[in-house]
Amino acid sequence: MFALIILAALGASCANPSILSAKVQSMNANGGLQHITIGITVENLGDLKQPSNLLQSLDVLQDGDKVGKIGLQPLAPKQSQNVSYAFDRSVDAGAGTTNLTFMLDFNGRSGSGVTCHAGRETLKFTV
Image (cartoon, rainbow, N blue to C red; front, side, top):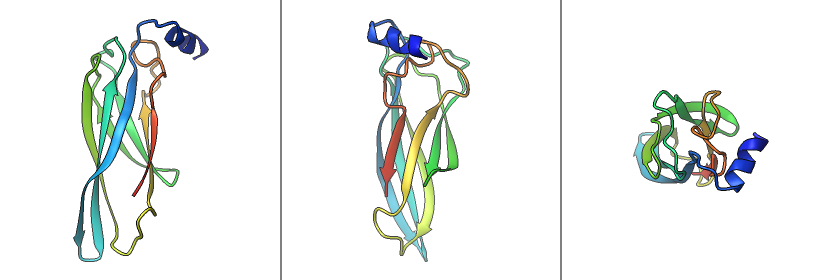
């Protein structure tokens, strides 16, 4: 990993998948539940295409517990992908009471073609 950081610092070519943003796309009440959909954008900010056989994903944690996994396609340089995560909670839950963390997961793969770990691989989000 230290070698990858050095390569990134020296400007070596690498894939650099990064979580650019997360935002609430919709909130709909249905009885005592509120259905919330979060939109997340991931982009390869690097200059290398990720391997076509890369099985990467976005792990979703709520208050530290893994509650979901969203598959991501391998990304070409400057290519982005928009995905969404939906969940239900009580309509009585107050604003700012649901803590989510989105984390890129390369499923054990490494190397400059997968990621140089120079971007934002974790994003905390509160609803």
